[in-house]
Length: 627
Image 1 (cartoon, helix red, strand yellow):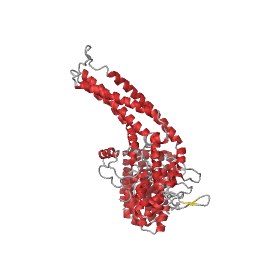
Image 2: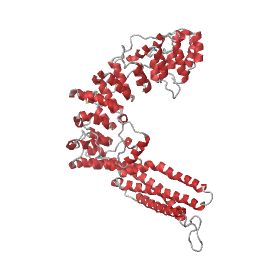
Image 3: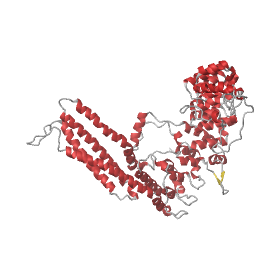
Image 4: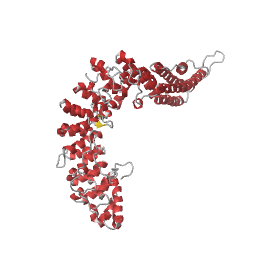
C-alpha cells in the first residue's frame, strides 16, 4: 500500500488478508486463536450512501498515505469523528493508513500531529484483521511513528492481533530489525498479561528467521524457560541449520581483510581470528540445554517431525544435522558434535552420514572432520547407502553447480572435481574402489560418464581462452620486435650507435622492450601448448591449469614491460623540454596495465588457487573439531 521502494507494509490493509504465523518448519500450524473481542472503528462512511466516503474518506486516505497534514487537518476540522472512523472497507483508520505508509518526514509529522488529536483509546482501535495501527507500523518498520503512538498510549504494545500475535512479532515477521530492537526494549522483555510462552516462542523463531540474532540472544537469556520447549528448540535449530552465513565471524577492518586475503593465497594466517557470531552464541546456549536431556529427547529434537509418504513409509525431511550438512554449515555441525560425538554415526533416510552428504555436496570443511576422529574414519568411509553407493560413488557424480559459482572457468571446475575424486579415492579402503552399486556402476566409470560434458566444455573454454590470449601475445611480440630496430632518437648512420646510448631512459627502453618480447613469445608458446594438449581427464588436474597460469602471467608481464618501454621512449625524446609530456604519457600508459590486472585478477587468482593452494583443500593444518 505504498509506493515502490518504501518501507510500507505490502499486504495487511489493502489485500485484507489475515496475517498469521503460518506453520512452523517442523510442526503443523496451531488453530487460530483470535482475541475474544474486536475493537473496530466507527463505520459511518460505509453505511447507506457512499457520498460522504467519496467526499471525505477518499481525500483523507490520500492525505494519510502521502503525509499531507494540511489537507487532513482541514477534513478533520469539518468532521472531527473521522479521526476514529474507518476509511477503508477493512476497517483501517487514518492512523492505520499513515502508520503503514512509506516512512518519510511528512508521514512522521502527520502521525505525530494525528496522535496529538486522538484520545488514548483511539490508538487501541483495530481493523478487521485485529491489527492496531502500531501493529501495521511495526510491520512497515516505521520506528518514529511507532514511538509517537507508544508515547501516547503504552497499552498498544501489549494488544494482541490475529492469532494472538503482538506488534513485536509483526516487526520480526517482516524482518524490521530496528523496530524489533525498539519494541523488545519497550515491551519490558515481553512481560505482560497477553504475553505467553507460545507467542514469546513465535517472536524468537521469527527473529532467528530474520537474522536478528542479537534480540534472539536477549530472548533466550531473559526467558530461559523457552529452552525447555522441545518443539520450539526443533524449529529454531532447523532455522539455524539453514544459515551457514550467519555463523561467519565478524570480520576485521578492510585493510586487515586485504592483508589476510593476500597471505591466505599462500596458506598463511595473519592477524586475529574473526569474532564469534551471535548466531553461534545462540546455538551454544540452546545446545547446552538440549545436550543434557535424555537421549530419546535429543534424538527427537534433531530428527524433527516424521512425514508419512504415499507408500506408507515414514521419512524425516527436517533432520537438522543433515540439513546443516547439505548447506555446508560446518560450524553448526562442529558445535553439535563437541557435546554429542555419536552424531558422526547418524544416518539420514538414504542411509548416508554427514560425511557422505558433505562429499556429495562438496563441502570440504565438513569432510575434513574425518581427519579429526582418528581410526573411526576407517569405519565410516566404507558405509554404503540404500543404493549400495559408497563414498566414492557419491563423489563420482557431478557436484552441484552452485558450489562452483565462485570458480572461474569450466576447466577449473573440472580440476576441482578431480581433486575431490582423488581425495576420496585415497580415503576409502582400496577394495571399495571397484565395488559396484545396485545399478552395477563402478566409481571411476561413473565419474567418467557423469563428467563427460564437463570435460568437453572445459576443453572448449580452455581453447577459447588460449586462442584469444595468443592473439594478444602475438600482437605484442610483433610490436616490440619492430620497436627494437627503431630506437627513439635514432642512431648514427655511419657507426650505427644510438645517439642517446648514455641516457638511462634509453637503457630502460631497450631492456623493457627485450623483456616484453621474451615474455610475449613465451606466452605464445604456452598457449600453443594448451591448444595442442590431449585434454584427457587427468590433464585438467595439474597440466592445463599450470600452463594457463604461466601463460596469463607471461602475457601480463609482457603488457607491463611494453608500456614501460613505451613510456621510456618519451623520456628519451623529451628529456630537455616539455618534461610534463613523458610524465603524462607514463601515467596514461599505466591505465591498460591496471585495467588488465583488475579485469583478469579473478581468473589469475582462481588459476593460482586451483594450481597451488588447492593442495591444502584437504588435510588442513587448522583443526576445527578438537583443538
